[in-house]
Structures are given as C-alpha cells and as structure tokens.
Image 1 (cartoon, rainbow, N blue to C red):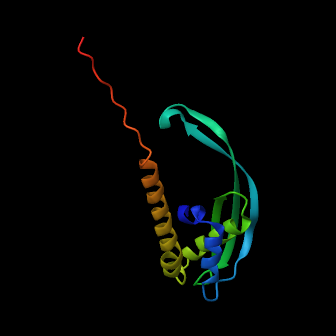
Image 2 (cartoon, rainbow, N blue to C red; image 1 turned 45 degrees about the vertical axis):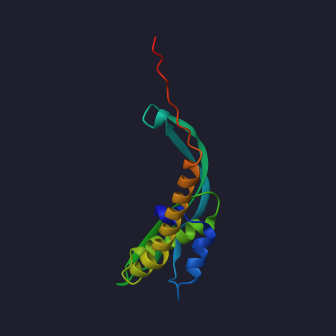
Image 3 (cartoon, helix red, strand yellow; image 1 turned 60 degrees about the vertical axis):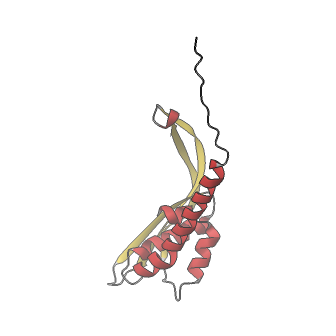
Amino acid sequence: MAVLAKARGDELEALWSAIPEPPAYRFLRKPETGLAMVRGRIGGTGQAFNMGEMTMTRAAVQMTGEAGEAIAGFAHAAGRNQRHAELAAAFDAMLQDGRWHALVKKGVVAPLAEAQAGAKKRQATDTAKTRVEFFTLVRGE
C-alpha cells in the first residue's frame, strides 16, 4: 500500500488503463479529502510534538472476488487527488483476489517500487554531494 500511496496519480492512471478489462467496483466510501495531523519527534527519538496538518484523501471500494465473495480495498494518499485514492483502493482490492494478485503485483507494484527506489537512490546521491565533514583540532596546551 505504501508503494501505491506514494505513486503519482498519473502513474496509477496509466497502469489502470493498461489492464485488459479491469474489474468493476463500487464505492464503499467515495473519495474524501480532509486533514491529518502530522507528528514528529525532537531529534527523531525525543518528545513527540504536533508538527502540523497535511491534506489527505481516502477511498474504499468493493469488488466481487474469484469465488463470488465481496472484497474491500482501502487507500489513503497525500494530497487532493481523489482519483489517486480511488485507483489505489481498487488495486488494493485486486491484490486480495486470486485472479488479479499476480498481475497487479508484477505489473503495477513491482515497477512502481523499482521507480521509487531509483528516485530515492538518486536523491540520496545528490544529497551526499552536499555533505560537510566537521572535525575539531586539539590544541596542545
């Protein structure tokens, strides 16, 4: 779900369009946009504090599974893109269905995860170029 939530909306739309005869689904909860409190910790390990609020969109869908059972998919995504949350929820439901699991895992989640890992590595490389090493000289007094 983290991979789907962190993907761009246009990426999910393109991957959804590439699925031959995507499954039908209905909304359990139509996409809703609201605010979520973001918490932080001083120094990463210290006292928790409320850093501020961020915009989030959530959605829940239901589709019929392989054996006729109801399968629910849920998603939360940062920002206001309601279609992003809708498609992420649909992919979540598909991952729970035997007919679609392998296709979504291989054709949707794996490429997105690879692209996100590459972007994270490039960002780490760019950030490492700006690293400054500090050292202290000890005086011999």
